[in-house]
Image (cartoon, rainbow over all chains, first blue to last red; front, side):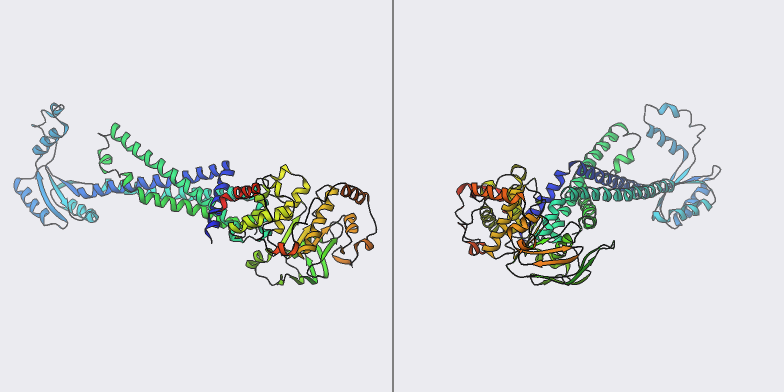
Length: 302
Length: 285
């Protein structure tokens, strides 16, 4: 294809988009919504992943001891635990040390709240255990529970499970919505192209009679679909980028205390922006081209 | 040039549009095809353009066997034809110049060639002054001349005119056929014109093929003899023509030679060249 033809076809495609303003806007809007949802779901999953990874890295299991253990019992238990599979480190914390720790945690302002508990300490003695392989944490916890002298085991497994479940739910719901939106986008773009074909049926008719090739007649419609895809991708990308950054700032400002784990582990949007933009553009162009390219033949009958 | 052998066409709905039609048009002939509506004229044109395939029989046009032609060869085949329609089919949003250039732009003709050919064809049809006008700014007769220019700009071996006078004032109909006759005489272009206006046919006295109900009813070399009736239109035309000069003056174009050698741009005035460059500004690339 010669260069002058290429320019001509690009120009024609752009003209199609402009001359069908309303339908082009509708197509761009729906496609943009579709990409926004895909992007939001992706960002959400990435953040959940990041948090799950963080939680898993903690790999901390707390084993609370029964109250009536003697010092010897505790020493024996420490040895047993140290020899257990998948446990790298054991740290003994007495209930008094735990109380001191809590006092320090809540800060000097509220320290007084815990005053008087020293004599009748409700806390339990405990081992803080560092686990090696987080994927085997369940077995480790089961083994701990079966050990004599251990009253209760607290592991981050539940949090991990909740987050993993959330991740799955987001993925499934996201995929479903996105699939529906992709179909809707294709339908709307197809409709837009159909309108263009209709409004330009005279030109197409003449092109057929003067001997323009099928490819030449169809190309402007492909360009139209591609342009719609690219525009939608760019808009969706920018909206998502600024929206996400703003949301993070807002959470940071208002929920810094409640959600420190989110703030600390949030994904930086601009860090993976190039991949996202490339993905958006690819998907936008793909949907645009499918919408215009595959179905245009039906309406052109060239 | 054009050869139909035992051509039949049955549409999917059962309509039998052509029944065993055989006819031959030689290179350089000027042929009228007449017949009432529904007689099969449109189907004849459609098979000629390979818009429709025949049900049986063979059609040869410009050396192409249309029945055996592959889809991808259709565009190339159509470039060897020029087609004019009753409703002109000009693009409203394009100037006269661009309408004619359009036929070249969409068939991979380079900009340089377009800038040479379009002004030439426009001046040949007396449209040089209208190059910058839009279709709605010119008369029906002029619009049909633009359509003719567009058909001619590819320098086709055959021009197929489907009721080219159907939508224009009767007096101007003669002008269009005069033009076709000139093109036929000067450039040797084969012309096949479909019409149902008997006045025109008898006035111009050419070969007439009459189609009725899908069969060739008659094929005579002498149109006036077969259709002996003249109407008021002819009188009107004769009167008009005696008063004013013919709309088209071919005297400055040395006919067949020029038709083929578009390179010799007949003294296009500077204003026109500017127009044509503006018209092509986008197509340069």
